[in-house]
Length: 298
Image (cartoon, rainbow, N blue to C red):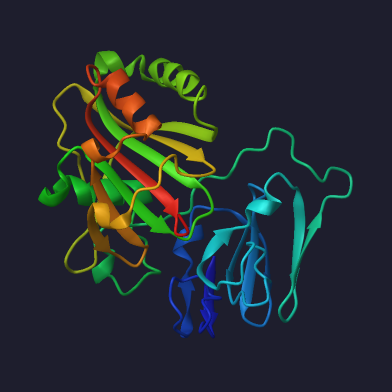
């Protein structure tokens, strides 16, 4: 999906309030299949093939449906419409409508959609936010793999304009262990669900990651893995973070995605998903790195 024109309230969904005379790729939605779009005076709505409704732009009258009157410069999931089968969207001046399927308005066994594409690799230098920049989590992990300031064991937190808390762990496993990785993860999830409400989880194998060069080009950055090892990323979606961590407690980096804070493992008492994973798999998984994408309000 591309957008252009008047963007002073963030209604173009480009993480900026600038105007654009040429169509710009809405990078956050570039991996989503857009079904319908609606535009008001200064706000925009879209629904995807996952039946997820996103909004951005001016929100002073509550027209974004996010439970507040803040404006957004990036498309943000309307969580109150989660589980509803939206067939069409309409927008007026400062108001919005979502039309549900008359025969089947509710989605059985609804699961929250996968996260939008949010990048964190050297974004503070990037001015062209419409440029494709690789898989979001791989960008984050590549940055903090090669940055010596973040090589310690701990949790990297990004405070951004998302609704749910997304927890990620990247790790490597030997070829022998890899054959049983999914079994290990399902065992971990069963144990975690006893104490933490997880709305959705997924495991994927990483075959390559991307980095942005000094001249703005994208290139493949292979992980430095021992022979006979494969790398994976596990994602969990929860409605809220398990613990509140003061932002001043860790190292902080500003980016156009949001504020990035790194907290050492010893300062994470209470982070059950991380500590359970670390203690359960420290003998079989290697190079574990932990990341949370948190709502900016937390």
